Image (cartoon, rainbow, N blue to C red; front, side, top):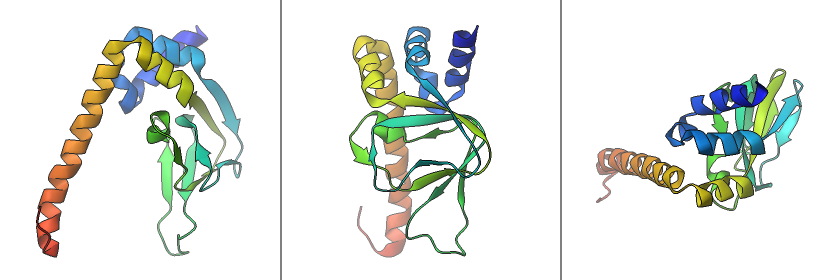
Amino acid sequence: MALEDDILFLRKIATFRVLGPDALRVLAIGVEKLHLRAGDILFEEGEPADCGYAIEAGVIRLRRATEKALDEPTLIRAGALIGESALLIETDRPASAIAMEPSTLYKIPRGMFMRMLESDVEAAVGLREMISRRVNAALDDLDTVLPRFGQKV
């Protein structure tokens, strides 16, 4: 039953909602479950990012080196995905991640995620369409903001 529970949890993550049952099963089989204590560091800013993390329980704080003491902390809660871009491209961590309370996460390695997409065309197409919608929405947002700064679109 644990595998089915993992599939149900992964299906709740926005990025993975576009994936079919077979793709979710592959993900659930390939993830590693991590348990962090409050204060544990998940990763440091600048480290190579080779995986994403889906938060099942707990709260993770993202902290940048340039963060000031008065800045509002960035808190990521259960049901969120940290490092989505790391699932698709080689990149570095833009911030450090620290558990604010006992937390459970699913570590999703990029290699395994890419193999899943290569073997499941439907999953790859769904993910591509979702990313395309996000990029278009971001560009639309820029179209409304840039004129305020005298920028031509």
